Length: 340
Ligand code: PMV
Image (cartoon, rainbow, N blue to C red; front, side, top):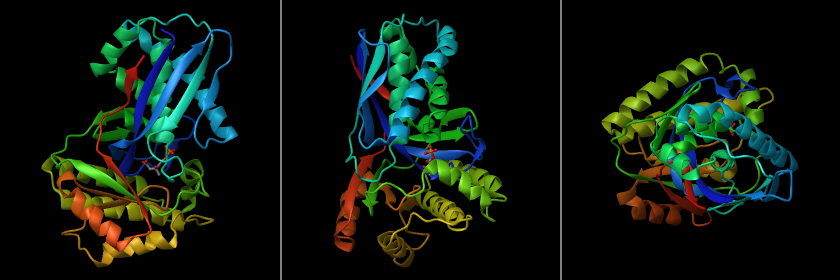
C-alpha cells in the first residue's frame, strides 16, 4: 500500500478556542464546542515516492511558504507520534521506503475566506498515520471502532492546529485540555450557511490573535466565563433547546470579538457588511426567535438553521444580502479514509 485518500471536515465553534494555556502544545485556555461541517472539507491524497527521501507538498490551495514548513513539520510529528500510539492498538509501523507526496484540495472555494487549517491538519494527520500502518485494513477497522485511536490522532493533530482536533468527530464535539469527546445533542439536524463577506486572507492570523487577546482587559475571567458557557451549551444541546443554544452562541461570538477589539493594539476582522448582517440579526430578531449566529476569527457570518427550514432562510438571505456569496454545509461526521 503506497497511496491513499483522506477527507476531513472543517468545524464551526459555538464556544471558541481563543487563548492558550500552553503555547507549544496548543493546549486551550478554556473548553470549546463545535459542529462539524460536512460541506467544507479538505481532501488529501498521500503517496510514497520510493525515489525520494524527502516529503513534499505538490499542491495545496493558497499556502504560504511558512504554511508549507508547518505542514512538513507536522508530517514528522505524526511519524514520531504514531510510534508511541500504535503499540496500544497492536499496530505495526510499515518500514519507510521513501518520501511522502501530499496533494491537497478543498471541497469549498479556496478563496472563500473560510479557515481551512482545521480540515487540512486533520486530513494530514489521518493520512500520514494511516500510511505509516503496516496493515491498513487493521488500522481502518480500529479507527472506525472509535475506541481511542481517533482521540489519540486528534491529540496529535491538535499540536499542528488546535481546532483541527475537533474535526475527528461529529456532529457535536467538545474539546478540553488534552481530551476531545462527542457531545450529545437533541437539536434537529442543522445546516450552516456562511455569508461570505470577504474572501481575502486575514490581516491577523489566529496564532497572533491567541497571543494578542492576552493584553485585553477583558481577558481576566475569560476562561471561567467560557467554561461556564460550555456547560450551559452542553445542557441546551442535550435538551434540544435551539433558541437557548442561539443565545449562548451569540454571547460567545460577541465576547471573542470584544477581546479582539480591546486588545493592545486592537484589531478587528469585521467589515462594513459584517456589521450590516449583525445589525439585521440584532434588529429583526429577539433572543426568542434568532437563529444560531456566530463568527469565526474572520469577517464571515455563520448561521446555523434547522435543515427543514433551509430554503426559507436561503431565500431570506438572498433577498436581504443579494451581493453576498453564500456557502452551505450540512452537519457532518469526522475525518475518514476514503479509498486507496
Ligand atoms: O486552530 P487555530 O489556532 O487556528 O485557532 C482557531 C480558533 C477559532 O477558529 C477562532 C475558534 C475555534 O474554536 O475554532
